[in-house]
Length: 251
Ligand code: 1GP
Image (cartoon, rainbow, N blue to C red; front, side):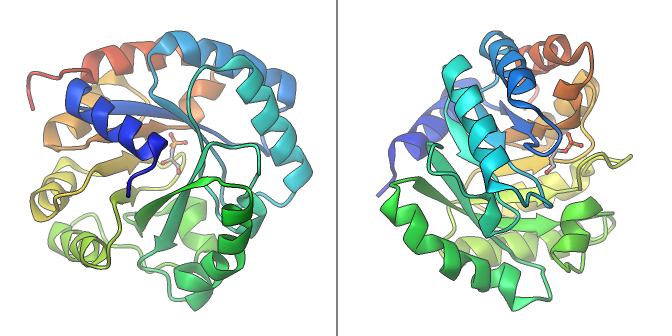
C-alpha cells in the first residue's frame, strides 16, 4: 500500500502534470546553507526536497543537513542514497532504489539488504524506484559501476524501465548524471514514458526552463535539479521552472 509521501507525489503529478524536486548534496552544503536553500524552496513551488549524492560518507553531516532542512522547509524530505551511508532517521521517506544497469550486485540488491532493517526501525517511508544510468552517467554511474544506456538507444532505456515496473518498482528515474552537459534527450524520455505506467523522474544537467519544458513535453512526470539551486540565482530559476512545467499544456 502506498504511504503518505507516495500518495502526495502521485496526487501532485496528477494535478500539476510535471512536478519539480530539488536535490541537495549534503557533502557540498553546510547546515546554515541548507536552511537558506530550504527557505527558498518553500517559495519556489518545488514539490519535495531530495537529499543525497553518490559519495556521501558522513552520516553525521547528513543528519545535520536533514535536520536543518526540516526546520526550515514545509516540504517532504526524501533521501536519495548512493549507499547505506545515505540513510538518516530524520527524513520522511527514502528512494528505495536499485541501480538497474549496475554491474555490481551490491548496487542492485546488496546495499538495500543492509539498509532495509534500519529503514523499518526508523519508519522512513520506502519509495520503490528503478534507477537507470543513461548517457555520460556522471559520478553516479562511475561509483555504481553502471553500464550506461547510450543516449542514442531509447529502446534499451525503455526495456530497463519496463523490467523495473514488472519487478514491482513504483517509480523510474532516468539519470543523466549530475552536472552533465547534455540532459536526457526527449526521444529517450518519450520511449520510456510510452513503455511504462508508473511515474517517470528525469534528472541530470537540467539548468534552464527550456530544458525542463523539453523534458516535460516528452513525458517526464518529475524533474530533478541539483546544481541549479547552488547558484546565486538558483531559487529564482527553480521557481521559473516549476511555473513553466506546472500544468504544462504542451504535454
Ligand atoms: C543528479 O539528476 C540529479 O542525481 C540532478 O542533476 O545536479 O545536474 O541538476 P544536476
